[in-house]
Image (cartoon, rainbow over all chains, first blue to last red; front, side):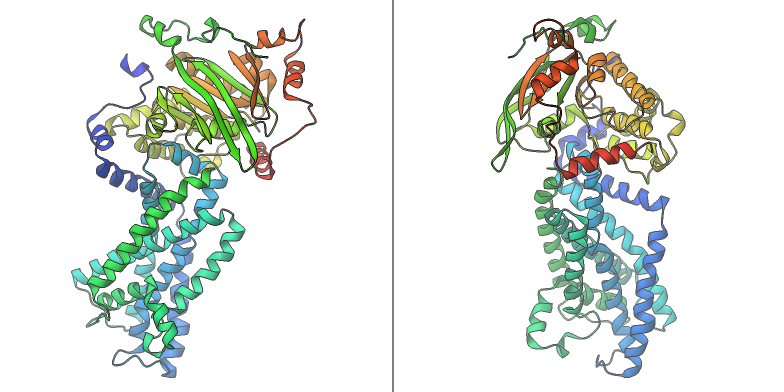
Length: 278
Length: 290
């Protein structure tokens, strides 16, 4: 009988606990939003396959040419080994930076509105979206590892190293997709977003240590690259992916920079996201 | 001119409702007080005051740009009001937004389910977002699908649904958590007459079965006439008239059709509003079944 009445709040063990504990609720809702995105992928994963092409092109064409030319001085690390973590970071960036277009698409439909009228913390909506971008980019990591094996790059297969790669890739994708979401909330239309996306990607990519060491950069670009989160992604990946890889900044610093940037972006996103529906 | 009818009309209440619900019927579930929204110098909603009783089917009518959608967006907490307030199921939209969100369902005008998931999956995500306990999720989803006549389509991708089916799925999705009030923005726009009838049949059943209060906007006067217990005609952000259809038809002296009453209060029919995006959304709606 009780079921027949309109009960605004469901009464029950887990749900009640989640509703009452903001932290548990936040984590749970973040995973629900991520689940939403991952279920979409399950129905149509052609996207994952087409995206795998890009790192292959960079490593097999760009990488081969530059490695052969001997133009890049990467110390005692062969250029191909130097490049592999950089290309993983780059493909994570390229997948994540256009993620905001989905949000604009969902706004043009009424899906953003549906999420916003549900009792879901705004920050969980934003982080959940970002986190799902992280899951998407794992396929890129697998492709890059396969290519690296093919190219004879010496990889570190230790469990800790693999865990670090996994964590950094997810963190990086969350960071850049949340940045993308913030941009989407500002520009609001697909056309403007495509323009802005292109303008943002290239500077982030070139002002990082992804395809060349920072010490061959002019001073001003070196400074810029130190402000670029992608540099820390590349640094952490170089330290973790390669056998005997070393970090310039220290893995702790890399994690700290990436985590702090992500937290700030999620908080900004949580404020901006509701504006999409107005 | 404003009319003051008795909000709890017998014909809008669920017939054969349990005795314990008798007091519940006359309770005010939506109380809008001087609600105002400005965009720059333009006043979209101008000091709107209105109340709706539990179990009513209330229709908000008006031309494009009259402020109907802006009103609904404020009531469902998507848009903060410039001034004024409203209480929805006892929660203030300005200070208790989460309480409001838990008590309402909202079906926006544009498509609000994801075409690349199945109907079941769409509902599952929202069952979780509304904190339905795990063991309750599946039975509640199946019940909602059955109630909307979608049991057969549960595991099909929504992208393959017809326009009417998408609308019914959206209503199922918005009522999973048994909201006190269901807000619908143009629920039948772009549907063929048969699909419109089916959607309305399910909406009316929802009111009867669960006592859900319906607050909706519509362009279709004949739908308002046959299904809404009370209506309000909005014009330039203000309520021009409220009452039952019969009351409004007699309000101009002698009997007039609802269309004549509408034109009287909402200005010339040629007077049109709305912006490019509204038209886009609406046309897209019309393509639903195409």
